[in-house]
Image (cartoon, rainbow, N blue to C red):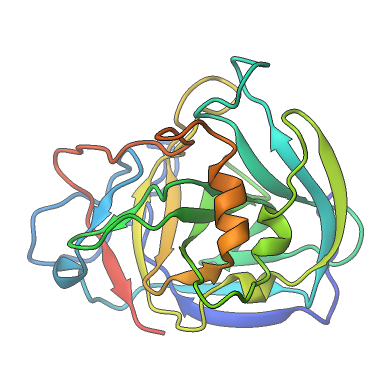
Length: 265
């Protein structure tokens, strides 16, 4: 049964790049862009060149997030289990089953928000810019038909003015590896940047799934503006891994590279 949703959800409409799907499903081919690239799924993460992004009309992405949601913060312990945190472990906010279910629609298909998790340093990078210290992934899973994902990606900078943000509620005082704790009233919309220009391509997961593979296709929507977290939140998260390590997958050298679409706010 699909989760029911309340009328209090707020919808935000922005564009979405067409995405590749398995060969046994009808594919949505991207419009020609005059540049070399592929609309097929590539390995993620990738470097994004803002100046080379394709500007074409794209199908709408509609975000339905209620004012707040409850859930559980988990310090997920993936294989190899135990010991110190590995590159595949992460801090994630798992959406609870009660209350309004946050979701998005892509081309009329619904994807429910399953979790928000973090990587450090960031996995995606914009050409000519340094890696952000943290990247948040809003993982949405298709609710009907073939398995599929859509991920909103938000790069996070560290605030230097002593103030905090909603991200700090998820990053500060994490549970120990392999454990969890409940948390209430997370305001999802405050986790997103104010400016909604996005860059989109078809890629893969950046950590192995339960089959040990980097599942494809994944619809990636990377926000062009960074959000912020407090100094303590960023430092606490990054300190969970030994210095110089982290849980970020390296940039992937895809040939040909993906066609990346830019959509204005």
